[in-house]
Each structure stands twice: as C-alpha cells, then as structure tokens.
Image (cartoon, rainbow, N blue to C red; front, side, top):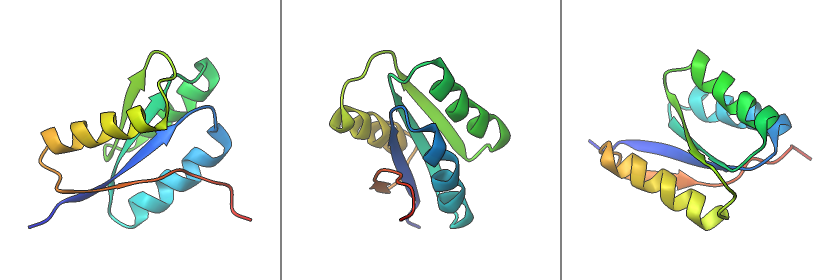
Length: 95
C-alpha cells in the first residue's frame, strides 16, 4: 500500500496556513508543516493546528533556510515514517 502525505513549507503566512492544511486533511493526507524560521505569532498558528489534529506535525527550523531546505526537511521526516509519496507545495490565498 502506498502511503501519501503533504509537506507544507511555511514562513510567515498565518492567514493561509489553516485553510490549506484543513483542505489537505479533508483529502486524507497526513501533513508535515515545516516552519522555516517564522516569528512567534506565525509559529503559534502552526502549533495550534498541530495541537488539534494528530495528523499534522510541525517541524521547526530555528532560522529561515529557504523553501528547498524546508521541503527536504519534510520529505526526510516523511520517509523516516515510511511515507512513499510526498506532495510539496505552498499555501496561497484563493484568488
């Protein structure tokens, strides 16, 4: 069986994160939010989402290392937990 998940690189966009993660979870995907060095307010949003949903994990970077590093962090964590397919993208506000 193939296990799929979503890797969500995240930096200072608290207004879009919750809707994005909620949509991914409604589609049955485990979510790895990689907080790429956000400030305290944005970190709190990611932590709040993870606290209410066991299918969401936050992986923090202490400083901003860039989207590529965030994607790698999430993909490596997912691979260690035996997820085979990883979807990485970014959350944007709907037009």
